[in-house]
Length: 494
Image 1 (cartoon, helix red, strand yellow):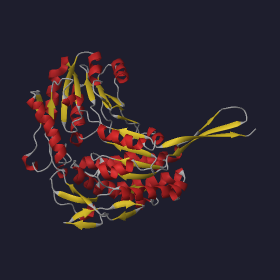
Image 2 (cartoon, rainbow, N blue to C red):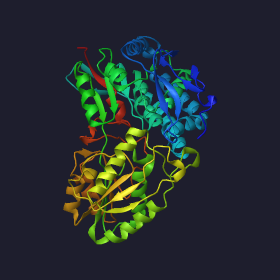
Image 3 (cartoon, rainbow, N blue to C red):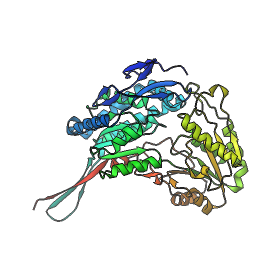
Image 4 (cartoon, helix red, strand yellow):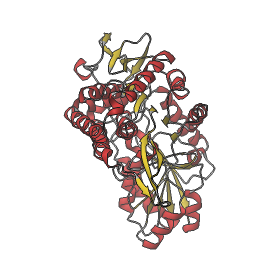
């Protein structure tokens, strides 16, 4: 990969060693950073850019700008006006799709086609919620004679958003679009590992017509800027996507001021393959669900449960899929790229090495091309059969590592599927219609897909977890309810 070209980052303020350096976006204006964080390209291990290392002072200013926007132009805007701005932003994002996709690809290491899909998803989020902004209606409750009772839905106020590094662009749309559509003003603290596209999107949001302070972005470390944001007395809601351990800290901080929190904390999602399934289609889906974004996906299908009678043919299909995988840098547009950084690479390699040391059978393992050894690549690997108490089954690896388990009959399949602390997504592969319905009801998960998995992301589909996977819902119309509240107005006219 060549060093990033300046035209990819037109909103960077200054340069260090020919690399872009960003400040913070507060009140629709760029503020130079007093301290910086280095960003490394995952595909090469080389320096890529510099981010502002914000802290409590920048968070204070961002929250103040958001509160001023709520009291000013943004708070006075009608739902239709907000919707038009969101849709104008969506169109602007699409017009910059190729440039933004390359920013995303360089920053995360993902293949360029996947990065393009992520940018189109951002536009879709803002289009969807822009169209929905003026369609959030209240209700009238029939009550006593001489009373008129209305229930209206209102924004919460200032919303805080802490997003992860695996899908910076998509998470920008997923968490911010519904909050802004409802009329909240927002403060975003994106992950310091990868957020260049968030800053470029923020600049385009200003161009699209969002009033000053409606959207603010402060970059920095989680323990500094993130912690300052979650405990700030001026916010009214927190959205967080990340690990269960940090999610607990976020919820504890928000509890100080008794504000609501939506937490999406990952998963250990199973795909259950019965003997009557279309094994060829299932194998293709299972492979994609664990290798997309190099397995760095909260909803990754990191477990596959296979009925014993079809274990051998399914393993053969799965091995063929993994054997055909292409691994490379963004420009090569392979099937998967590197992991985000050296720390994550080492963590996932440790899972693989420990499993091999424990003599877990390796069903198949792809190879990383020798020319890419400087990047943070990990070979996609399938282990199995794996016992239910093994770390590969119980812990979120967050890499391209698949654990295969074997079952006999529906009851054992359900027990294995529900046998972890997580409950985010599940897949069921069977042609039996009655079994499809039984499994959909018995599996404890926020989403269940039947004879498919993921369904292209689905902006319209409510998404969120149960158990240790978190609580609250993003996406779909359900997200609008999370970032708003109801007010009951009782009018006595007798």
